[in-house]
Length: 87
Image: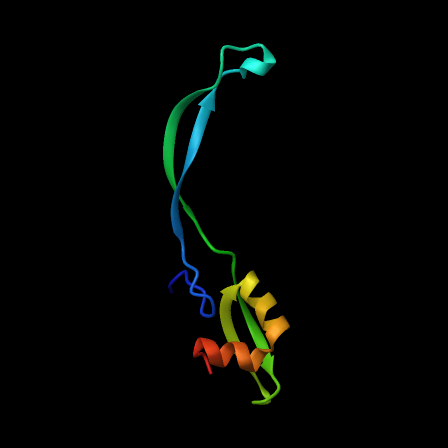
């Protein structure tokens, strides 16, 4: 099962976390030093929900981001899902 939004097409993006050590100069230290840069993945906030489509009079199961569900509530289920090619 892929980690991809069916509506917006959002998928995981590559990023990094920066590990720092030391006390900041503003707080009386000698400064912050980067000790490591570690790779990580930024994953989309995916949810699986049943969406009621009044035009079809049935539920459609959708795996999408929370932002996409806000788009569904704004533009309507049938319009959004048909534009994405789900129905």
